[in-house]
Length: 364
Image (cartoon, rainbow, N blue to C red; front, side, top):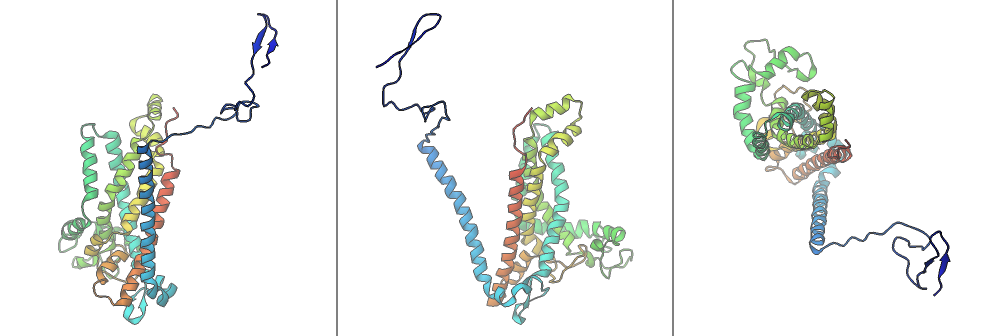
């Protein structure tokens, strides 16, 4: 063993080098200087079990989704092979005559969903802001539970409510059809969207049936169904707005609404968009409520107040029981179109939520 003597003001110091063959420490893998330290994480049995169960659950969801898509594609292949791309452009449903397509019901599906979103998003935004920012603390848990209970109500209940109460008693009430649809047709009928062919809203003897079973009424019912889902997402996002930024806004003299406008809404913008698109995905696939409300037509119906509408899900519910083998394949093809459309909507929603600032920690 050799020693090195180093002179200094306090006398000679000695330093003993490590013996030959000694392995350098972990933070000095090359032996020439400090380096990054490798951290080895030791997971316990419970962590390993939870990790395996979580991975298995996520993989099972993906596998089931792929299997559903493959099943629909295989079952729909005879109809797709026969119709080709005309399946997306034909406005008729006659599988026996080899003339069928989803152009009309696809447009109806999108219109009903857009009406539902146009009504539900402002309602959900106001409800979420009231619960998270204005409601007293004692009342807040009750309101949260009520919103969650509304999301759990079966769709058939909403459909019955819309058919027996909303449509004849509130929206198209009485022999004259007084209600919101008639008001819209009277004052906004010059807009093609609110026009009703063959109906004069100022005629006192005009039949109110022209305003029933429409895209608008179906959209209102679907809006009541998707509003709780959108409200839950927005409320959760608003409640995560950074406390430091809230207090900073108050310190600068902002009112409560000023704080909400400058802190809460910008922070929750991504969650608002994501919740809206999740609600849109639910609205596109709604079946029973739409089936009970609309009067099915297979043409593109751009007038949302006019009698007659359609959706892909209602078409499947209406024609599945009395269809031939080719008709079943055509319905499976329609279901495949709806499956792909909702998949795209939900995928875009997940991307928006993942890229948003919602849930980030405060920097103040």
